[in-house]
Amino acid sequence: MNYVALVGEQKRQVELTELEDGKFRVVIDGRELFVDARAVADTTLSLMIDGQVYNIESELDPAGHGENFSIRGEVVNVEVLDLRSMQLRQAKTLTGGVDGPAEIAAPMPGKIVAILVEEGQQVEEGQGLVVVEAMKMENELKSPRAGVVKNLTAQKDATVESGLVLCVIE
Image: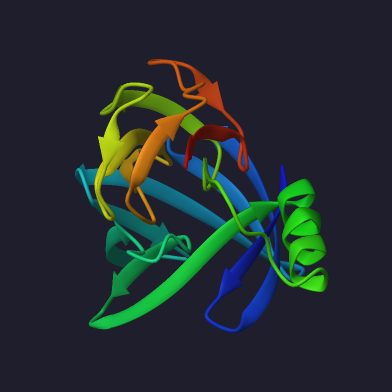
């Protein structure tokens, strides 16, 4: 599957192929890596890349822009988008942004493991909405602002693709 990863201010082309349980072939801007990924806690992932082990802590970015990863003391913001989501983002940027409802979308492919709200429920900024498991890590998607949950399409145990809208906050 092909993605665009926004790492800080840099845009990276990423191709991800799952080889077997926890093992991936990752091509980043043409550079091929083989990665063995293991979840060691809800928000901690152990990656073995070219013989080096990296323990990575993750949390959703409070502003709703991807995830913040802590790697060896350095925090890096990463947002992963499929091609369609990247094109939509570029279109929104060109038109000056979009006012109105906030769409809560899956940041990467995964499985919905929990739904924390109900349609019509009042939520506060930063409140958890849906938990998506991706790459063996659980990611809690939070509300970017206070509002009411509308169009809750997320279903427990459903498989989702990057950019799929799971609910809307109005």
